[in-house]
Amino acid sequence: MKKRTGFLLYIVLSLFVFFMMESFVSDAMIAKGIETIASYLPLRQEMQKEEEEIQLDEGTHEEQVTYDKVFYPYYDMLNEQERILYAEICANAQAYNDTFEPQVELDHDSIHRVLEAVYYDHPEYFWMNTGYSYKYTEEDICVEITLEFNETIENIEREKEEFYQSAGEILLRASELQTDYEKEKYVHDVLVEMVDYDVDAGMNQSAYSALVNHDSVCAGYARSFQYLLQQLGIPVYYVAGISQDSEHAWNMVLLEDGYYYVDVTWDDASGQTYMFFNLNEDEIVQSHEKRGMSASLPECHGTMYSHLENSFLPRP
Image (cartoon, rainbow, N blue to C red; front, side, top):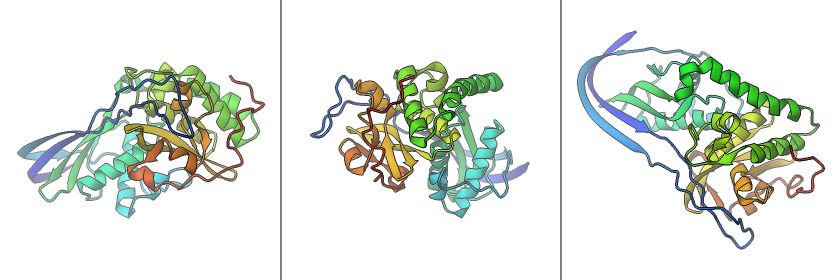
């Protein structure tokens, strides 16, 4: 344990990125039967001035950890200092330790960027809410980070067992298929079949909401799709941005000849199962726009696996 004394500003940053889905109409694509649903809560901040001596938990540190950029693209976007904090956040999340002292000195913009990278790269941390708080000095240096865990943390081992069991049943069937495309399509079809869009779903920013509770919003669809394909060894990314002027989340997948976009949420809600399956850059920009860190993801120009709706694979 270490002590630091000084004038601290306490800021609570509650991200709670509740993405919302709206219907869209474009010249090339028409999604019918989708209602506009407001589910996005803007960033909330509380600032409190404190003059006190505080005890800081050093937390759990993970030394010399690197993450393959093919599977963890947001980690690859960070600088060296930010990557150290990224690994430290992962270590504390895995240890269920919510409050710790960071090893590196970073300002609040960098803290926000690193937390966003962890959330986007790691759908397996379903017990983490998309929110956090931290304390920092007058010099804008973070001295303590507190992660937010959702209700599953109260009985995490049981909740993990349910999560892995639900995911395992899908993965077992998918693993029997031959190609990455077949596996991708199977996972997509399972989620369309088993998950209902529900803005009031509990923990709807997590993969748990979709895989265990079978109710979620776009973030839950995207994170469950991401988690399952990651487990199958297929590079897949969480994409955050805008669709029809509303916050939204979807995915991109790397197959044999390049990247493709997949929006499981829109495929489920539109009633046209493959309308947003394996799209390229020219197609997706008619309805979706990548924002923030997601704007730095690769463009999608794959063609081999586009518009194969008449696949021989049966629906689950």
